[in-house]
Amino acid sequence: MSLFKKKSKEKVYTRYSSAGANVSVWKETVEKLKTPEGRPEVLDDIMVLDASSANFSGIVAASFFAEFGADVIKIEPAGGDPCRKMTPYGRNVKGVGIPFMMEGRNKRYMTLDLENSPEDRETFGALAQKAAVVIESFPAGKMDSWGIGYRQLSEKNPGLVYIPITPYGQYTKKAKEFANLPDTDITTQTGSGLSSQIGDFDTEPEPYNWPLKAGMWMGWYVTGISAALGGMMALLHRQGTGEGQMVDIAGMDSYSSMTGFPATIGFTWDKPRPRIGVLDFILYPYGHWKCKDGLVAIAAPRDQDFRALLKILNRWDLEDDFKYTPDRIPDIIEQAMELHQEIEKETMKYTADELTVKALTYALKSARSKWRGGGIPIVMKVMTPEDTVENPQWAIRKSFKEVEDEVLGKYVITSGFVKMTESPPRIKWVSCEIGKDNEYVKTKYL
Image 1 (tube, helix red, strand yellow):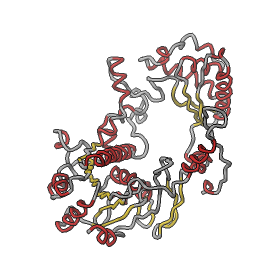
Image 2 (cartoon, rainbow, N blue to C red):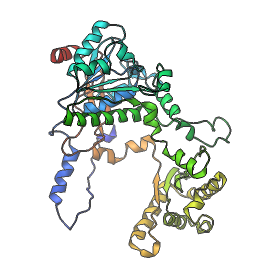
Image 3 (cartoon, rainbow, N blue to C red):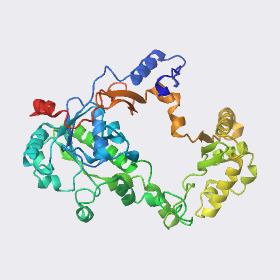
Image 4 (cartoon, rainbow, N blue to C red):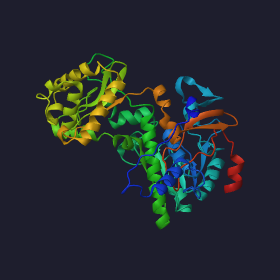
């Protein structure tokens, strides 16, 4: 990729308490942020067993532990985790799907048939005595019925952090009723209620009035992040007390935590929030508009920002009708759409770059002038994936890394999702080969 061939002159921007103060310290800090090598791994003394199956939430959670230094062992049957086959358009590399490859960083692979082999369950139990964390995504109670659930494992390993991931958790009537419901991304999104809030107005003709799922596997990824965060807090608790605990992760809980706006709107209007398409009923203008060469995102929610936007677009005639924030975010969709359409009449006269420059120019003058009212409208081009990859920002921050596996060859993955000066995450290797580390695990832990 051209991304890795570009050499960009880096600039560092920061504010100092006084001119020239601590410049050398800041430069040293930036160098540490840029390069993760040579510093301790905060989780290098723990082992994680990832027994999740057909569930990317568990795989994603395990990836975070692995990047911070944990010895993560992926447990799967001889045929492999079904997640290996989940991939866009059936594309794979030597039988391994693209998403699974992306999550193969710093992991080891061991084959155990937990569903059918009592002997393999016994081996898993022995490994769990040495583990700090166990992640699993089987139906609630299934691991317990096999004799390797939290109840049994914690008796022999009181410090164990046990993270089961299911649609509705480990208790409640709903959890029992849907215990065998596969925890898929789409069930997490729809069951949380958020999907019904995304999409065009329900008055639009089909299929434009259908609810939409958000992004690629957002439910799984948000749940995976929740599992990793809960697991890390449990490890901190264990560090101080020696006590392990169960970290019960329900995909519905994780994703529904993002649905606060509908509840707010329902309380304010005393009626349910409908799907609102391009509108935003918390802030406005706040969304996407067409322009000559694509789309721009505009954020001008404060009254002074909105008035500045009208000046930039030469539409001061709209100020009287939409002067204050409540005028712009009513519960009357037609009124809000009227404003959206009027703004778009003007944005269509410019390219995205022209609109961005106009907004930046105004903002700079506004920051220096008390007469402009402090309005700072934000305008940004809506980037395509192709545009985004070419942005030198990624190369400067080393957000992607070219890796090489002896089986899968060379490929590019995301790298360094968090920048830290003292204990940063890092990618040491990538691997996806089934059972590759059987002997390593047995020799080290059994």
